[in-house]
Length: 293
View 1 (spheres, rainbow, N blue to C red):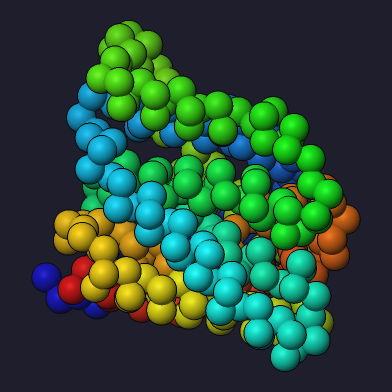
View 2 (view 1 turned 90 degrees about the vertical axis):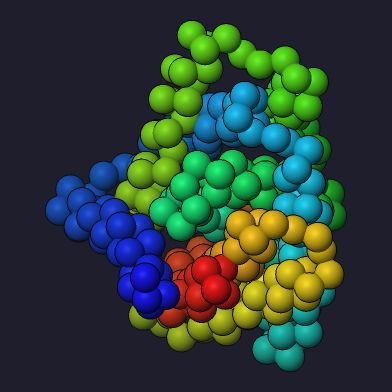
């Protein structure tokens, strides 16, 4: 199959759901706070727990993706720091969105359409590692007095710990328990995309121009580090593809939530996140092209 057609088949369903969310937002102007809280504290943790404890997932074989996630997060931050200084932006505002990408809202569905169930399992490894770094290192970058108690209260963190413990120990949940967990967890992907579409309504014209730098720096630094890892880190073809896809993703919505919690210019962060996700229409096909070669 022509690679351009394959990329189109992967991207179109994702964009269609985001566009539907945008349409719903314009038509009904729904309050998404409860839905987003459910996704962050219920659907997402169940998805992580279900995949990490799945009998068919070999967690040990996913270690290169854990390493790749750490290196891409740290490498993107180091490369983004000079851009913040040169553009006169506060690094505490600009750098975290460059480090922590949208591997939940966009990474999971793209991995599903590109690589199937093994792709979702691999992206979960990238996603959970990035999330743990975001709640720890990311919080300290935004605010040096960050409270680690927030990390201990996160259902996503506990789902990661429990799921990884079960998977690595060889102990698995009974099918009667695992099946409903996975059914609830599978709500995560479409709900994330719909929510992202609704959020697109918040982009302001004046913020669009100011956030274009971040929209480009995030995926370009990620792809650069991913390219180095593809040569240096021993990975399967699917894992290399997932790393390229991970590197090409735009800033995560969670960056806004963290910035808002610590009052670190949340409006600017929201603009960077939203404009970056719009610009991903350009950058994600590049990541998929490298991923599917």
